[in-house]
Length: 173
Image (tube, rainbow, N blue to C red; front, side):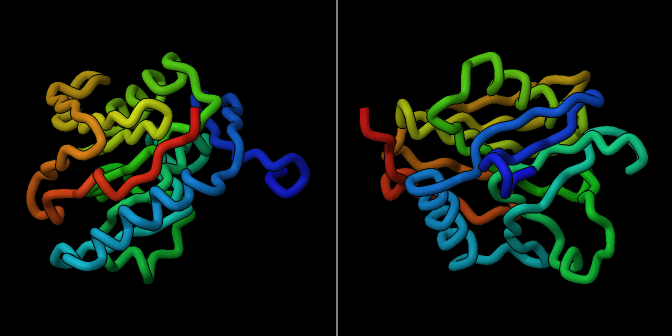
């Protein structure tokens, strides 16, 4: 499907959610963030791209999301599962696409919170703002810190911190 129409597909709530494959500045953001993380690797954790996270119990229903970057225990290298356990995710990163609507972003935040992903970083190349979501409970994140590009993101331990957002690209207006 991705090759046929240039869309990445996730399954949430039994339905398909499609969005364009990453390219250009979106991909550059992921690469630059990954370089920062790999230059100060957290103990026993590693960044992974194109890794899907289970959004519900069991792989049978297939509910999953695929963040742009995921920090997981390094033993994910040897895992045969196609879905990462959300409880193992130290950080999920979502880079907002040019075409995404505010509702889409809010929905994604809810997916990760309901699944129990501990930390979610959302980077918006359209407006140059970021949001760090922590402490998921009852389907929402209780901790939220917002900032603008140029301001560092202070990630919770054991993640490398701070993250320099001043090196991240912005979409042209």
